[in-house]
View 1 (cartoon, rainbow, N blue to C red):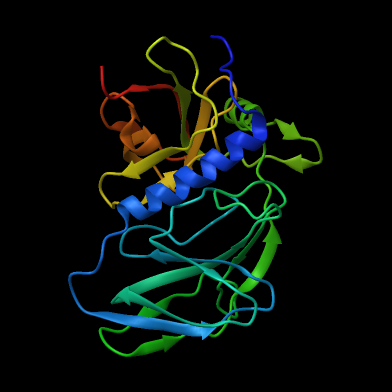
View 2 (spheres, rainbow, N blue to C red):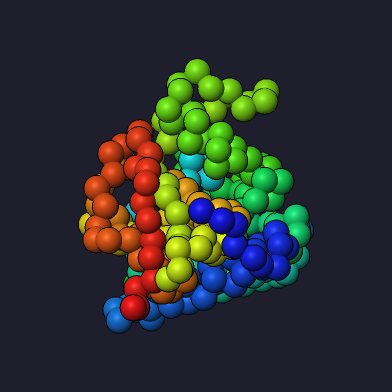
Length: 256
C-alpha cells in the first residue's frame, strides 16, 4: 500500500478539524421536546465547551477515548454564556488547543472535566424549563495518548511500554485503513464509530499517511464505522469486545 499524496501534516490536521465540526453539525438535531438552559461564566482561559448527553453514552474520559459531544460552544475568557439544550443529564468538558484547532485532541492540548469534590464526573441536570448554573470546570490536564503503532503493539503485548509512560492495555476500539477506489490510502480524515445501541459516537485522530486509523471506545458492542460524512464505510456493523482492539477493518468508498 503506497502513501497518499497530500498537503502534509498541517493540511491533514486542518482537514480533520473541519470534518469533526461538520460531522458534529450533521448529527446534532434540534430538540423536539422541552428545553432548558445551562448558564455560567467562562474561565479566564478561552476554550471550547463540550456537552455530552448521558442518555446516549458515557461521560468523557480523555485518557481512554474521545467521544463526540452532542453540543459545543466556543467561549471567550470571562464570557457569560447561556446554552439551550434538551432537558436531560449532561457531562461537561472544556477543550483548549495549543494550535487553535478544533478536536479531536492532539498531545499537548488541554482538556478539562467538570468533577464532583470526590473526583467523579459531575452530572448537570437541565430542567424542562428554566436554567441550571454551571459552577465551574475542574481538573485540567495536558492530553497524552500513545501513537497508533504503540497502541496496537500494546494490544498485542501487555508488557509494552512507550518511553517513560506505561501503556494502558485495557483499551477498547477499532483499527483499520481507509482506501479510495484505486486502493490508495486516504490520509488526514477522521473515522467515526457509532454505537448502534446507545447512539453515541467516538472519533479517531486523522488517518496517517498509510490511511490507518484507530477509534477508541468505552466498551464493547456493535458499531457502525464511517468517515467523511459516510463517503467511506465499513462493511456492516462491527462487533467489538471490551478490552480488545478489533483490527483489520477496511473502509471503502460508499458509492461505486
